[in-house]
Image 1: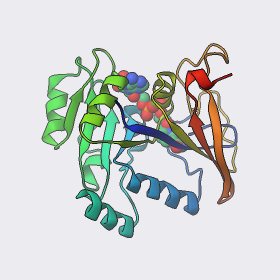
Image 2 (image 1 turned 135 degrees about the vertical axis):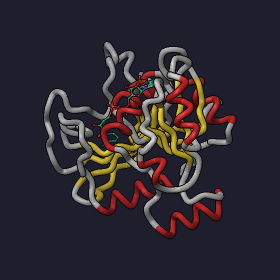
Image 3 (image 1 turned 45 degrees about the vertical axis):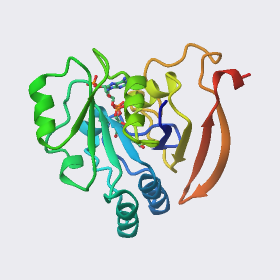
Image 4 (image 1 turned 180 degrees about the vertical axis):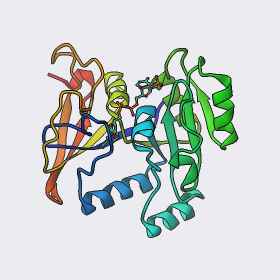
Length: 231
Ligand SMILES: NC(=O)c1ccc[n+]([C@@H]2O[C@H](COP(=O)([O-])OP(=O)(O)OC[C@H]3O[C@@H](n4cnc5c(N)ncnc54)[C@H](OP(=O)(O)O)[C@@H]3O)[C@@H](O)[C@H]2O)c1
């Protein structure tokens, strides 16, 4: 058993989610920003990889005051649980996920994570989930999250985490906002990086659910097909 998993990302017209400098870039506009805020507010938890925390230091909080108070009434805190996939417990104790917002912070580490760093994160109030020996075992983590009552999980990147989730069949839906710009750069991260599938018989198949013009770009909503549905 695992939560329902939805990846959300903004990418350039050429599929890049950042520049070759791997810094946070504004790809979407206000309407898409509000859509993402709504998605966060309706998810039980939001997840990112440690690469995104180190690059962007996102708070992952809900921004709208109205959505924050609705979330508090419904779930007891203004923000969904925030999860970092971080094998070696490298999340800085002064990261914005600790400084901003309310609700549970969960750091998923592996058995080899240095104990002193794990304790520092616990000291910040984080719940630690240990799954896997060398790197976080995502399937194991998902079962633990489900057992904690997390039924809906929104994943906000980055490229490496997206690959691990998609390639392991742990994703149900993907929303991609395609912005009106070209970033280029062979070293710039794309929606899904990792080693990649060897050919299209292995590829993760998608069904297009909807497409919509938003701001000056387009929002695509995809369902992941189970392998037996891929022709
Ligand atoms: N445009 C957007 O929507 C958007 C959204 C988010 C991020 N971004 C961009 O994406 C870039 C960051 O992406 P990234 O690929 O470098 O980092 P990432 O996907 O956020 O994090 C990857 C890291 O997660 C850790 N991890 C632990 N277990 C894992 C597992 N089983 N599978 C995969 N990763 C695991 C690994 O580090 P350890 O081995 O140390 O644990 C890995 O290096 C930044 O440039 C950021 O700006 C863009």
